[in-house]
Image (cartoon, rainbow, N blue to C red; front, side, top):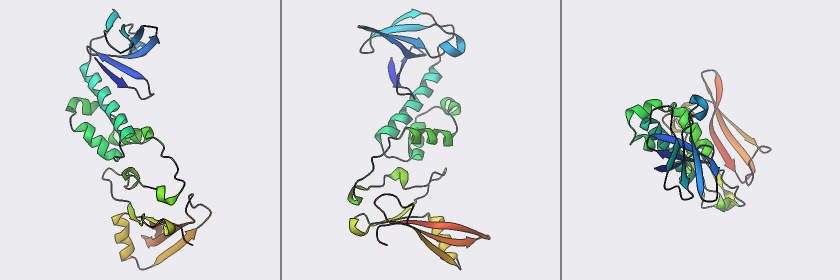
Length: 221
């Protein structure tokens, strides 16, 4: 028997090839119903004590046990837990969780991009720093969100909070910048995030279009 955390923050109980969600809580017992009650009309249920032990099945299921679905639920639960407990990039969490997953379970997972979006949704919202010395940029916000993530945090003089400068650019964008014949620079003040005074951008002309290749957050004007 194993307890997993559901996407909605509740608990799922896995037992003998079936998955249950908690249905009712009494003084000394918890009642659990089959997760396929709505889709298959399954009335299978069981009870446990308050410590999630001593399972006692009450009603039989109308379908066969499915260990693969349990393994799938475990993988998705692990992704959520890693999203909550680490600052690893979604692509890294996805790869770690799939490293010990069977091909059958991998085939049942949503597309990789969907899994990574789910990981980002489960990330706790970082508290807003009150000073620049408190501002740290975790790895999840330092890379792009492509299938092959690239470094995006190009520069951060984090040791100098009196003149903090944070710049974002990919290696590909820097190569485009180095090859550009014409460069445009612009500073915006009204939309600068708290603690900074200016958003500074560098743009170039590429294939008859103007693209931004560097974003900077500046404290000094």
